[in-house]
Length: 391
Ligand SMILES: NC(=O)c1ccc[n+]([C@@H]2O[C@H](COP(=O)([O-])OP(=O)(O)OC[C@H]3O[C@@H](n4cnc5c(N)ncnc54)[C@H](O)[C@@H]3O)[C@@H](O)[C@H]2O)c1
Figure 1: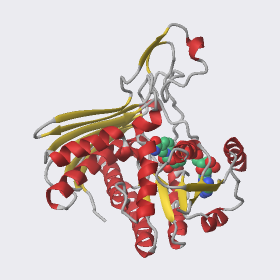
Figure 2 (figure 1 turned 30 degrees about the horizontal axis):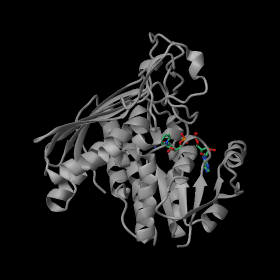
Figure 3 (figure 1 turned 90 degrees about the horizontal axis):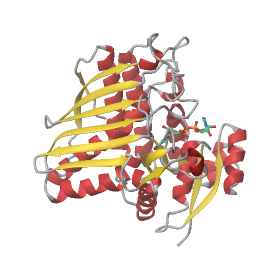
Figure 4 (figure 1 turned 120 degrees about the vertical axis):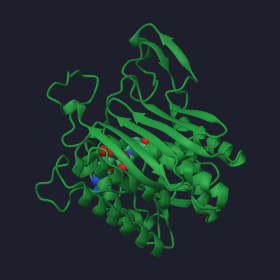
């Protein structure tokens, strides 16, 4: 079997966990041919750490690779995706697939732009990507790790084998604030907590309703309407600043609550925030007609450790974004596995090698973006219900 040639675009946080997961893909032979990033300093650091060639242009990397990992900020995804698909190469694209970044407005502010026009433009960006995919001999693999998290895949099995009707999903991603300096400026991230964090639990919820529909009659059950409220709590004048929550967002929300209604009348409630101490909360709960499941991606109690002195654990990774290693910790013994990063890469390369559609595809990615920007319009209208366009 010939090795599949892989290129990584970006050299920050996501590039690192993609690279770590790629090293553990066993079913398909891979050759990581190198990386490219806009920032030569972090590109060289990433490439030196991992003994990879640093490419001097993205075009060269795309030409030489067969599969490209898009580990760059969301504002760059549309252009890069189209470039990759036009050359008939596969694009493994980090979440969120695309969005609206105010590129057409001179004095753009995420606080004040028209959400109606943001929705229109994000749908246009989606169409541009989906059209490029239609014309391409390759395709998009939507890197939404929640889909491949073992707990979510096990719940898929439960739904399929017991012919469940999901009545209500509650799900959340929250933590104390993103590390990426590009995050928190709408122009680069395309939104705040709902876009950056909410897209994970929202994808999980939409995916499981797709699964239910496909197992019933071959047709996914898709989101139909949404109501949403967003707030910028850490930007309020009366916010009590303390160093443990990041509070440097310029024009995005740091809290979002989103209520989704699906085509069959059932619902999902998604919370996303930057206001949570004690590590990342990644959780999804299914209330079905015949069972109830709680998926704790992080934190979970697979390993619980008491450490009387912070210093003891200075060289030990405990769990993502924990504020302290002193006292009790829910250590994640294999975070990449619980979060689905590992299974995601194995599944992506199996589907590429076998010419099969990925479980996490562009239809799911498009439903998520369409729901998010409809939710922002609802939030502008203080929570009024907005219909979701399906592409
Ligand atoms: N699935 C997850 O759990 C998860 C976690 C974090 C981030 N992400 C996603 O990964 C993506 C990247 O986020 P990150 O946290 O790694 O950000 P980051 O800021 O750590 O890294 C971004 C990298 O992209 C490079 N870059 C920026 N513009 C570029 C361009 N036009 N061409 C080439 N390189 C460019 C930067 O130099 C940097 O190396 C985002 O879409 C983010 O939402 C996903």
